[in-house]
Each structure stands twice: as structure tokens, then as C-alpha cells.
Image 1 (cartoon, helix red, strand yellow):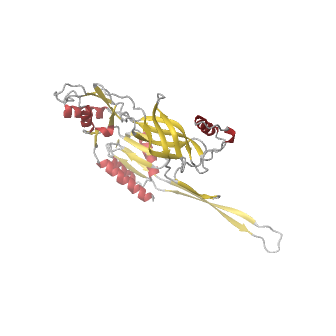
Image 2 (cartoon, one colour):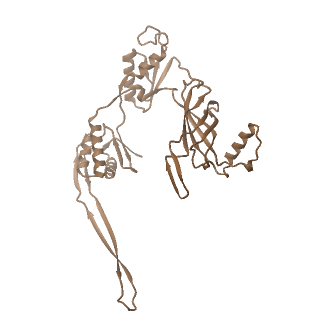
Image 3 (cartoon, rainbow, N blue to C red):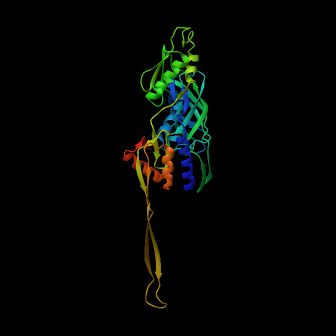
Length: 371
């Protein structure tokens, strides 16, 4: 398995090292300022559960159920209410600026009590509010959890998480988010970089006319949408959608900071194509210590007054692999780095330690990010 993982990593690294800076459409690396998903949240009840809901001691579930029944004209005693078939949940969703009233959105339902499962439940009418406290959508419908739980006492079978579910199209938009473009539209990069901003600005001006785009900083580009009709790059009478569509579809060479990302928990290492190192010598060797304990039993002769004795015998073995010293020249690419380290026979976790040491020595010309 280690050999397979190592071969896979080397294969990926060689591909990364051989590839040049990739080109991407602007819509894949940036978005128009303000055009984003807005989170919605609400509190509701899921009913119809088969005894897998909140327990009787969950006060907020009982209070919510009693309040709902009172509003429907049904007077009940909270002390007599059992909530095994009811679960209190938090309902979340996202709403884009251009969703109109009547449109549908997906919602996620998450238990906040001690319910065992939301399987087979139905979410009751739940208002969903935005950050300003206004209701922008309502949610209701059967909950799908994508799993199941079955079995009896002492033996149960469970697949996937049972306390989080989803209702596809279960939210109905009641109010649209106010949004309007002005004379200028800001294009915002998801990963700030001066070089990429400059390339995007030049590309837009080449395709749509000089002066349409203007770089503001490492993240934002201002696009003029109010140019007179007929002028080069103009919106021709306010065809804003056409202009922004052309901007999104332009290809740009993406640049960025060289980075090595290491996940110590899983032993995963991902390196960018532009990672370089200065001249450095790497020596790597493994020291393994193995301790074995064997128990020997000594029994007395028959009909003697002795007793059985258990005596441990310990065996210690120390093995140290011969370390090899290899030199990586300055300006080596990622492919050369991986080939050199692979020649040492290192495992992914050993490679992590080596990269950290190279960075500490100041020879790694890239950011080392450990997650």
C-alpha cells in the first residue's frame, strides 16, 4: 500500500511539475461584487418521526410544539406532551440576489436536540430570515436524509448521518434581495494577486476596448458599464448582461504564490508547479527500535512444594538504516525535487519532515502551509 501511495504521489507531482501556468475563465477565479449567495436561517419542527425524536426533557421542543398548537386554537398542557415523534431543528439555506418571489431553493435541516434520527419526518412551515431579520423565504416538506437506521435491541444498522437532512426545492422565496448595478461593476478575485489582476485588466481592455477595466488593488477591478453607445467597448444602449457575460468568458493565465500544502494527519502533500529550492543537501535515515517480551513458565516437579512461576524475558533490537546524502541544485523544479526524495526511499510522512527541514533552512522558495 505504501508503494502504491508513493507512486501515486510521484505521478501527481511530475504532472504538476511539467505543467505550465494554467488558463482559466474569469468566472472561475473571480465574481462580481455583491453577486453572491446570502445565508438564511430559521427554527422549525420536524414531525412524523417513529419514536426517534427529542426526549421528554428537551424543554424548547415541548415549548415550540405547545405554542404552535395554541396558535391553532388547541389548548394543551405542556406537562402532558410527549415529543418522541417531534424534533427541533435549525433550517438553513442560501439565496442569490436575482431569485424572484415564488422561486424555489434547497434547504438543509439539522437537529439541535437529542433526536436519534430525522428519517421519515416532515418539516413544518418555517420562516427563513436573513442577517437583517427580514423573512426572505419559507420552508416546508418531507426531509430526505440519504440513509437509514434499522435493527432491534442489541443490534442496529446505520448508514450515513441521520440527524441532518435536506429538502430539495423545499424553500419558497417570499422576498427578493435588493440589488442593483451602477455605472461601474467591481470584479473581485477569490485569491488576491497583483499579477493576476493586471492580466485580467489587460485582457478585458483588449477584448472590450481601452478604458473598460481599471485595476484598483490586488483583489478588485473596476469595470465601466456606462460608456456611450457605439463607442468601442460600450454597453450599446445598456446591454449590461451581454457585457458581463463577455467578461466572464474571457480566458486569463492564472498566477499565484508558490505553495506547498501539507496535511500531517493524513500524510497528504500537494505542491504547486512553480515551487523551487535553493542548493541544499538532504540526509535521511531511519532508526527503529523493537522491544519484544516473552513469558517463560517454570513449573515445579510433581508432588513438590514449589509453585509455578512466570518469568518475563525481554529482547531489544535496534536497527538503523544507512543514511544517504543527496544534493539538490538551486532552481530545481518540483519534478526534480520529488525524484531526488524518491531516491531516498522516503514515505509521505518522511517527506513532510524533510520539507519542513528544507523550509527551516531557508532553501524552499515557497510557502509551506500545514493543515
